[in-house]
Image (tube, rainbow, N blue to C red; front, top):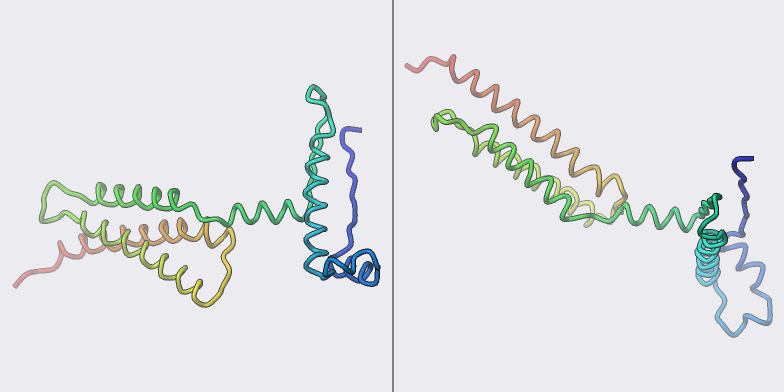
Length: 176
């Protein structure tokens, strides 16, 4: 066999609490569902560590241990906002928009339009996330890792379209 999968089904925190609530050995620790959940989480973390360390270093076999706690940790790490990455992306787009819309003829240059467009998108994303935070909406990986860049791409694309349409229509407008 190339692979072997084993599953351990654990009690839920509620089931663990109900199972041990009348046990005389735990009456002194203030047994609750929260403590049962903490014990289950600690057991899962310890199991994953032991499963990954059980094989010698030179073994050709690999062990991939996974638990619901591991999944929660992965989701939490992906939900953290990397301010450096977001700021870097917006600064690169700001430079790109300003440089591509800059013209040697200053009367036709729209570098300021590129600057204003990227800043408007950045402020709208920041205000939208701030409003969600005030309303108590929790952030996940999509809102912190995808939304700022998706809004940047769509907003800047529309800014380029508006600037192009303005230059095309302004050439055909007669001045009298």
